[in-house]
Image (cartoon, rainbow, N blue to C red; front, side, top):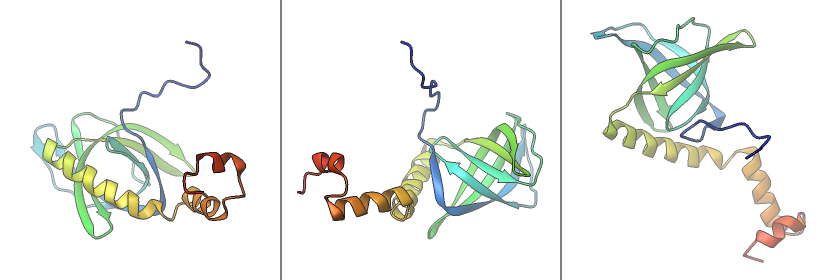
Length: 152
């Protein structure tokens, strides 16, 4: 099976964020010891049901035994999600970190519900969705789209 597309190893789809989503990051646990630390604000670049990518000025070593707590705000709802930093990089003077969620089954279900609700509310204003809306309203702008349009 020869293909030019790279193999996608991800279990969940990553969603790029059109509205800035900030989170408070604090240290939760190192090994078996629970820790409390001051929180720092981080900016999320993308998010999925499996983890997120965030940027910050902090230097964080990717370690499996260190759990971080991210306090996210999805519209009216505040969520606390534990995460493990698994990847690091840098871009435009900021440090980028890939984190995977470490949630119980109940926490995962609640997180997925709230994230889905938030994405539905914010993606309505995404540029590609707005373009799709305009094409539906015009109906003659794109002949290829018209073939799939069941309304006309």
